[in-house]
Image 1 (cartoon, helix red, strand yellow):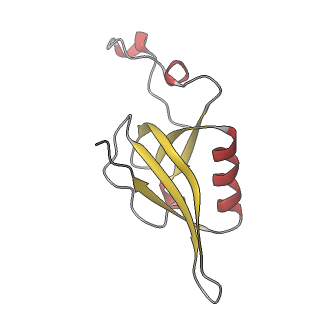
Image 2 (cartoon, one colour):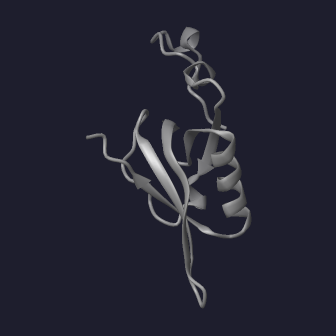
Image 3 (cartoon, one colour):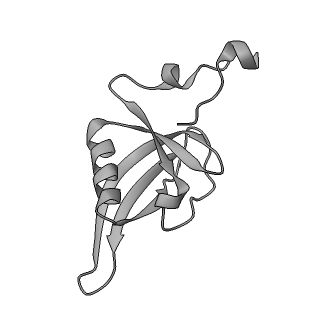
Length: 108
């Protein structure tokens, strides 16, 4: 999992990832290779929904996880703040070979 360096190292006063998480949440790194569509331009603090899709004889599209806060992003993964249900849904969808589609939520 990718995380920002501790504030003492950067000197920027930025809190480490573990200190930026809300109570009863976890950080989940989703590799970009798991996503069927490119991630929209996201930055820390943005909100993203994930849907799972399957094509073929029995197409399927289901909401997977809503209002995930972006904690960090780089060229390999996006780190989301997730609750237990979202983490389980994302892992199960990936294990079931469903395609994950990210949707950037409007901040307006």
